[in-house]
Amino acid sequence: MHSHRIPVSKEGVPFIGIVVLAAVIFALLNWSVPAVVFFVIAVFVLFFFRDPERIIPSGSGLVVSPADGRVIDIAEDNRGSLNGKDVKRISIFMNIFNVHVNRAPITGEVQQISYQPGSFWPADRKRALLENERNALLIRNEDGMELTVVQVAGIIARRIVCWAEVGDRVKIGERFGLIRFGSRLDVYVPKDIAVLVKKGDRTTAGQTVLARNGSK
Image (cartoon, rainbow, N blue to C red; front, top):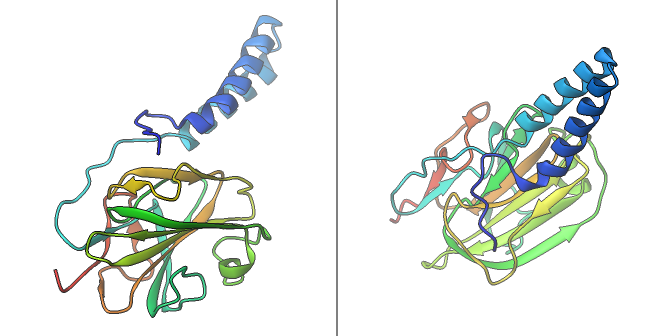
C-alpha cells in the first residue's frame, strides 16, 4: 500500500487544480464575480481534502476510529461484517466539513476486500447500512483478532477510494482510503471487547479509541 503523508490528499489535487485554473482565467479576463466564486470553491475543496497528521495512541488491544465524525449507532449486528462472527457495530457519520481520509483501526494484515455497488441514501439513515455502495476490509492482527471496517457512500458521496490491497500490512492509524463529500464508516469489532464510546460522541480518525480488547 502506498504511503500518503501530505497535508492534502492527492485525490483532491485534480479538483483543486481545475477550480484554481478557472479562477485565474476569469481573473485575467477581469470577470471579477466568477473569479471570486471559483476562488471560494477552491478554498472549500482544499479544506475538504485536507489531510492533517494525527497523534496515534499507544497501547495494546486498541481499536481507533477510522474516521472523523460522530458516532450515530452502536449495535450487536453482523450484517455487514466479513467474518460472520458475533460482533458489535460502531457507525460513524462524516459530514462534508469533516476530514474524509480514512485510517486503519488496528495494526494487522488485510485478509479480504469486498466492494459492493449500491444506492446513495443519506449515510446516517438505517437503510444506508446495507443498501448503499460500500467497500469492506477484513483486517486480522497478530493475536488473531479480526475486524471489519466498511466505507459507505452517502447521498452526495459518489466515490469510494481504497488504497489498501489484500495482503497489505497496515499499521494502526495509517491512511487506507477516503470517501468524497459526506459518508459513513462502520466498524465491526468482536462482541467480547469493550466499546469505549457512546452514541453522539465525536471521533477523530487515528486518535479516538473506539474499543479495547479487555484481555490485553
